[in-house]
Image (cartoon, rainbow, N blue to C red; front, side, top):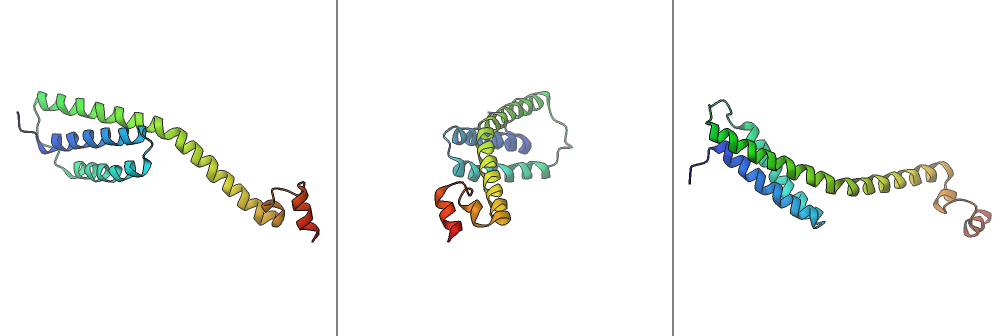
Length: 126
């Protein structure tokens, strides 16, 4: 088995971590996925700090390309899985923000969901 350059080893680790994150995202295990994502980010930072000026063989260039292609496909698949979750979270946060704004603007009425409900009318009349 050929010895891998430090850069290619880093790509290899990113590929493995990306595959793990995809499996965790498919399983809906978001907390575990974020833990793996931290290791992934550290690996990306390590790759950034490496010396990329040395010449590489065609074989190494092809190996880097193939690994990067897989890394990017994992990333795209994870984003596809996250999009509905992020949309749901954004809607949830938007609703909470609107409720806070209504509460600030209208006080107890907004907390009751509006003055048209009989229970809220009773509270307002007290």
